[in-house]
Length: 187
Image 1 (tube, helix red, strand yellow):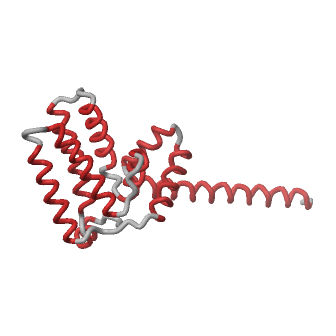
Image 2 (tube, rainbow, N blue to C red):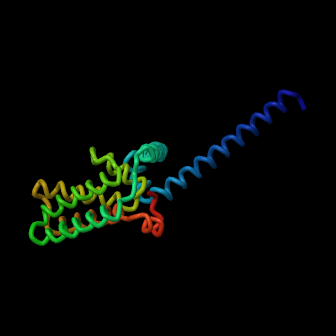
Image 3 (tube, helix red, strand yellow):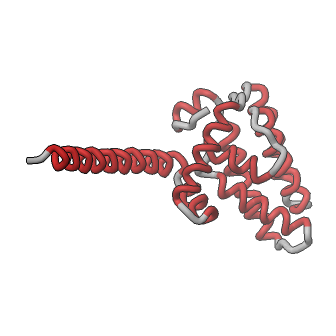
């Protein structure tokens, strides 16, 4: 066999091996992101229109949140926020729209106390999706319903649903260290 043919065969084998290895690494990365982000993975793929762009976005979110100083609430803060939630929820009977607005503010207060930036809503949702992927869609829906309420376009049932969605995120954010280990939540 001639030398050029041996070089060509070796090159083809190396290229094939490299392509298979690259595909395996990409699949593992995709699987990890899919497991970590759950339904948020599919939402991001749908929103951005491609798996590659979605995965780059999700990895970017992870890096951003790693740089934040996210921490647990103290027991005192936990109890204070839990009491505020009970008051906010009780307000719903007399003034559902105000209750929803208060719930949105309370969620932001808990996020701020935990170390999450609370400026832009889309950025808040992206940050929350890293450690709380199971409830980020609740947050988006609660926010949508709260905005409908501000425009006078929400029924009492819509407002009740907003409270249910805010409560899901609120409770997820409110967990303390022993509870987090029990449910397997990140930070």
